[in-house]
Image 1 (cartoon, rainbow, N blue to C red):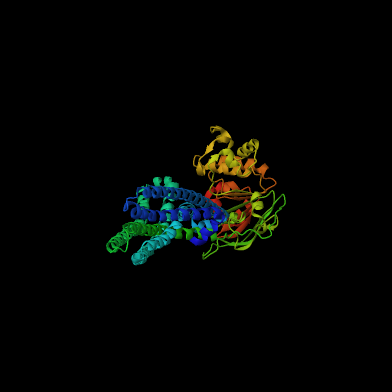
Image 2: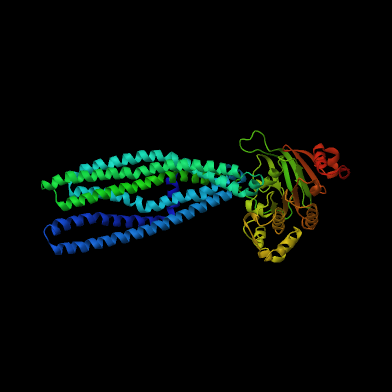
Length: 577
């Protein structure tokens, strides 16, 4: 997966990658040439006392060093640009893929895991690409070149190099093999820490209200300890790599000095050549160390690449139509025919053979006990989920055959949990209609009974809203969400228990203000409060995912026991009568 990911997203950077390889090759060759020049200065200048030779070749060494430095800086610059571009493109690809997911895929991965994959996992792979351009390219060139140059200085000591390289490779391979499982487990533990932290920050009021700080601290502490243990295990193996390499390198240096000294003493080798041989041996060891550093990064990057690929390869259960309908009637009816929905792996479906219809200008209310499937039913209309059986039609067309943008542009959804984005009041309202004028926004706020508190805010429409709408009360968030839907003037309104945080007086005023606006639209209201829906044109009662009653308020009181129980639980006997 790692190789496929890197190959795919580095493809647009072929020219800069070629420049990196060329620059690294020139820079590494210059570094390999320096010990040979130094050997010549010792053997032909220092030993013979030829000062002119030392000066000339010393100047040449400076020039070669300048070439090496220049090439190395340029290679790092290009590598950094490639890595940053790679990370940007990969994050954008993940974001686009997650944006195409239905609610089912988001629930499958979980928000904390998706955030970790988008940030931490991409960063690990991006760092590998950066180090690859600086170390992975130069390490094999230096290793092969160092072996050749060392053999050129003295073939008789080549057996030392042939012994050192396999020993180093075997030692590092054994350590890396032990690190891979730890890195894989580490990413899972990071997901868990992120999940707990996100839960505790989001639910801090609940934690404090129930005096559960100590319990939550213990939960987070346990997850943190588990992550620490895995990180320490991986760190111990990482820490063992450097001493292992240095032990082998120092033993090899001792061997060169011992056997090389005997060869110098026997006249088979010059002192300068021995010095150069030690330098080449150290370059070979350095190249192995660079390869070691890369191998330390590869296991973790490989795990991260697998996790990223899981997201990129995941297909949304909401599939765009191959031959989409791009034009819908001005006024849209809504029909659900024998709709069934079941979550993957569930024993029982959430919805069973549900059929209902709503015409333009008609208000249909959906009531039922908690868990009856009301929200799931509403989510099938904008295709947040797709029905596993039956069909959902708008304007006589199955929603699965309508182009998604066209479908969404004709719906006004107010979700059960009102969510506002960070920005101004106007920014949030323009989510419903990007080109909305100030007059249109004020009109929508007035209908939603939100104008009064928005006018009281510093800046009015330009007042700042905190992330998630946390700077507003629950009722204010709901009214802002309703205004966001109203400003669009959609053909179908979907209110998913979106009046629950309002008092009865505000609820009544809002419904009265909505009536003229929704006269030509189809309105679906999900509510728990009977007072909100008792005047609807038709009420649909759900129980255990099935329709158990349909009719007006009075008809259901007489003919539907489930509805009567709901009414009696909320109203007095006189009000029921």
